[in-house]
Image (cartoon, rainbow, N blue to C red; front, side):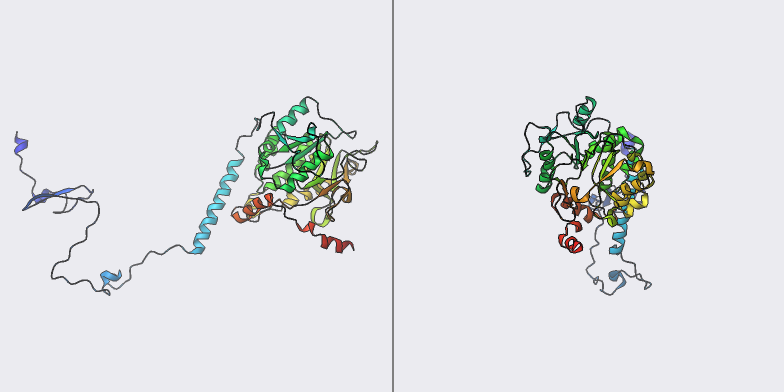
Length: 414
C-alpha cells in the first residue's frame, strides 16, 4: 500500500522541539543516530551540567531569585494571624446569615417526636422522700402522652382550675447525662405531688408545640440565638395551652405548691396565672419565670407573646448577642404584667418569694430555687465556641450563681 511506504516525518514536522515533549504533555519520539527513543513528560528534568561548566554562584541572580535587571522577585508570604482571624470570623458570620435565611423555611415537625408509651422512671433519682412506684409522679411522660391525657380529660384539676401537671424541659429525653443534683430536684416533685402528671419536654417536642399551636411565632422561635431564649418562651406557651405548673430543673419541691398561699387560692379569687415574685427586682423585674402556673387559655399569655414579638431577635443580635432576660426571660414577663390594664392585673397573682423561692437564703417551706445557673447567653454567639463549650459543662455540673452567695445576702439582711 502506498501509505505503508510513506517515509518518516522530517524534524521540521515533529510535534515539539527535538527530544522534548509537545505542548499537551504526550510522549514524543526522538529520532537519534542510535535509533528512536521514548521520552516521558511526567515532569521537568534537570539539565546535566557540562564537564567544563562552573556551578552557579550563591550570589548570582539565578540563585537569589533576582532578575537580571537587579529587581528582586517577590516571594510568597504566609497569611498573618490577623488575616486568619478575619477569615474565620467572616466564615462564621456567613454561616449565621445562611442559617438566618434558611431556618424559617424548615418544615415544622407536625409528627410526634416519640412513641406514646415512652416513660422515664424517676423514683430511683434519690429524692429526699420516696415516690410510690405505682403513682403518676413515679414516671415522666412525653408530650405525646400528655396530649392523649388532655384529649381524654384524664388530667385532674385543682379547685382553682389549674391542671395537676408539672412541666420540665431538657435538650433530649436521654437523661443519662443529667447531673445528680438535677435528678434529685426533679424527682422531688413526684415526692410532693405523686398524683400529678410529670412531663419532660425535649427540643423536638417544644418546636412541634409551636408548629401546632402558634405557627406564626415559629420563625421568631427559630431565630433566637440562645437556647435559653427558646426555653423561656416555651414555658409561656405550654402553660397557655395545657395549663399546669412549669418549674426549672433546678427547682426543688419542699412542702408542696397546692396550699392556700400557693395555687389553691380561696373562693372569690380571680387568679388565673401564678408566678413567683422576683427575689431580685433590680435584676429580673417584679416577677421571675423559673416557676409559673396557669389555667389553660389565660389571657395574660396573649400580652406576653405580643411583647415577645416586638422584642424578637434581630440579625445583629444573632451575630453579636442579646440579653435574654429582657427578650424572653423574667423581664419580658414582668413588663407584660406591668402593661396589663388594671382590671386584668388581678388575674395574675404573685407567689411569695420567701415561701416559693428561697433564693436568697437557700431554704423555703414550699419550693426552693437552687439557681444552678445552667443557662447561658453567649456574647458573639456566631464565633464564641468557648462559651458554648462552657454551657455544655454547666449542664452537667452544679455551678452556684451569684444568687447563691449566701454571705452576700445574709450581710444585706443584717
